[in-house]
Length: 406
Figure 1 (cartoon, rainbow, N blue to C red):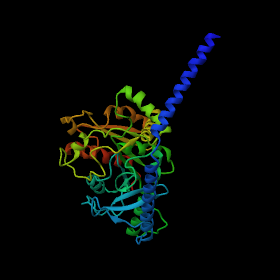
Figure 2: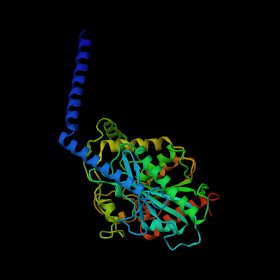
Figure 3: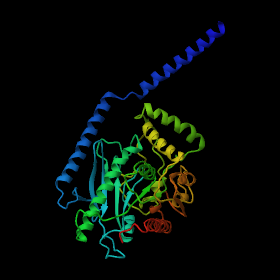
Figure 4: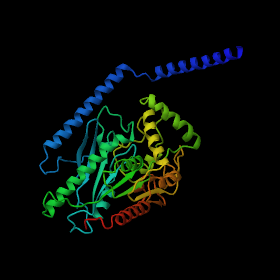
């Protein structure tokens, strides 16, 4: 009896301790009611603004596109911006009108294919050179600023925040449908075809970092959306930590994210990657640092859970049928202080992780190491980014052989 009583007493102590911990956590994670009400009001106002922009774009369409565009205030003419989405999430679609670059073959009236570019985390589309390269190669170039990123953020919305990778499926579907419709309308008018006769145009997705994870899962889960080729530029397939953190701390935060999704994670990240890019620091690019900031946006337990669940799916193995090119740099660095490696290595992710998990994406995966490549290979120094462009368009051309409109 004494032994049994001791076991019962120990069990009671453990249960009591768990209850105390649970109460403490509940109080720690309890939202401030005043701030919570203010946050919800701001989100409702942001949603109302998104709805109005989308409705205005639909009502003012005069070109038969289904949506009217505005000149992009970030990149200027000829770039155009369309509001897309609906329901809870709204995004922005950016078009580089076909034929805007000094084209190699300016006689093409119909593009060889559509390219949709998907940005990374703490990011937005600003890579004008990529758009020009794609257009010069004969492709209609489009990019999307996903909801809560870049041009798509309204006051009151938490930049870069999400609770599931699948949140972005609506953004990508809307972007692809809109781009395809506009390319069809332009091609039919140019070639004076019956508007009921579709012009076959293959579709390619190019995605960077977090966008690479999102795009991979989108293509896996949406068979009805026909994607003919995928190019991933340093995709975010694993957290860049040591084994102990990756195998213990990340799963724990992910678990907590189920119950406390809005609890903030302290820290602002490492600024050195931004230093390696910006022209007024140690790089050669100019961009809006309010949309792609030095410090990372606020992250939450729910964000960790969403990313971790997506990465676990990749590790378990996807079944993408489209040919995939996965590119990454040849070295990584994550030093807290500035070191010269940031000028020629991936300063965000571990390239070994990318190489390890890339084959899990599908049955037709090609990997390519870009010597001297930064995290965003298309923003590397010229020799490295030229190699990345070369690999990208050679891969796309080969993948689309027999499918092109040319």
